[in-house]
Amino acid sequence: MSTSAAEHLSPAFPERAAWGTASKLRAWQQAALTAYLRATPRDFLAVATPGAGKTTYALRLATELLGRGTISAVTIVAPTEHLKVQWAEAAARVGIHIDPKFSNSSAVHSSEYDGVALTYAQVASRPALHRTRTEAAPTLVILDEIHHGGDNKSWGDAIREAFEPAVRRLALTGTPFRSDTSPIPFVTYAEGVDGIRRSAADYTYGYAEALRDGVVRPVLFMAYGGAMRWRTRAGDEVAARLGEPLTKDATAQAWRTALDPKGEWIPAVLAAADKRLTEVRRGVPDAGGLVIASNQTAARAYARILESITGEKPTLVLSDDAGSSARIEEYAASQSRWMVAVRMVSEGVDVPRLCVGVYATSTSTPLFFAQAVGRFVRARRRGETASVFLPSVPVILEHAARLEEERDHALDRVTAADTEASMWAEEDALVAAANRTASTPDIDQPAFEALESDAEFDHVLFDAKQFGLGAAVGSEDEQEYLGLPGLLEPDQVAMLLHERQTAQSSRRPKAAAAPVSAHRALAAQRKELNKLVAAYARKQSVPHGVVHNDLRRACGGPALDAATSDQVAARIDKIRNWLVGRR
Image (cartoon, rainbow, N blue to C red; front, side, top):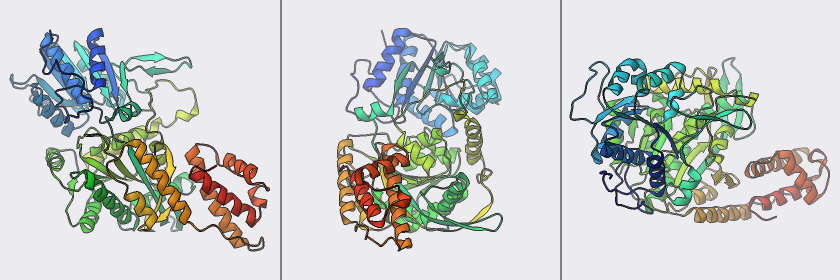
């Protein structure tokens, strides 16, 4: 007979509970708990989207195992110092007492505690100590964000050594697994028909399912491009537009230029995000915003810009220390508008009122992006939406479009397409450095000087579809998208976006015809057509050439390089109709 709290209560849908405090379980949590108790496995991997409630599930399982006498101690392993405290606070609310201040040097904790909270780095520094602790009593080990166990071989080996004696191990993750091939301890791998071994979760609850159940918020991605100009190390001045096709190096430098607080891009995007936050707060009065910065210097500059925009000093979180934890908790319980933080806030930190985000970092891995977006998706009631402002960088837009996809961890590689493993290792080093030092070294970027930047609203990405045809910052077109209500169901979001795009298209003047000899006008028409084709190709996930061929079939005429001005104008009209759903 279970002795855990609230064992008689039904799954909590549609009610919502604060982090780690649920007296009821959501349907997926109850199903995962049932699956576990039916099988009573030594190892169990639960993959659930950020914001779904993995902590509540894990603590309920811990109370079940404590009540049954299966275990007498709990060890929680988390990525950061702040999350240790967060886990301990959540556990206390369900009657489990965890020591988040346990240190390797003292090696003991008070008998008043049921267990300890550790970081992965803490375990890796003295695995033998933690093995001895694990052997001393029947222990449940909760491995939060287990993908950190594959950070490098030494970490994985340490975790395996420390917790191999545990009677039960519960592994949790909320993001796509890494793309490197470091095996993750206590995770089962199964070989597929293609010969690749992939992680096998015991229970999976993805973003698409959580969105359908109303457990997470739908996300509006607001993409901004603009003109950038910078000076290279060789002294050359380069100008390019963020959001247009560029080489990999040029994209990285244009992106870095956009994020420079001395330019106009960051102030314009922060002002737009603040307008969006004001609109959201009409329906969600305590809604907050978070700016994720690459390093501490940028974070301080962004905070000053926000203060000048809002007249209110934002909460500034610069490192993973006890003071930062207190500032995050204070912000979470307040009505303040903005928090600015270095990358440490991207994973696991729980502030349910965050509704608006600005992705002001050059970090480009899918794992980090998913963690960052996860800070904004936790739903407290039906109808809440999240809005995340992004630079118009192809890799980031692709991550946003693929938000609902799920991926397992693969140990084997059969094609060259999976060679990004080194990028993950490098990015992890940068994340660690951002948490430890005063600034993140830009070792992955050539030295250059950002000269100037401006911002332009590109489009809204929602449900992997693009809405909007581009607009100047402060224009009526941009304001209509920023002014979407903050309380909407997903189908209402899609309907309003379609309406906004149709209205924007109707206001755009049709391209004027020009004689073939007017080469500049014809070149401008071709550029406009290519931009529309690129937008439609991204929307439909097809190559540009396919769209051009479809336009030729629909409108007639030769290939683009031989088309007349009238023929190009006809194709522009046609693709504008396609963009608003009229074929």
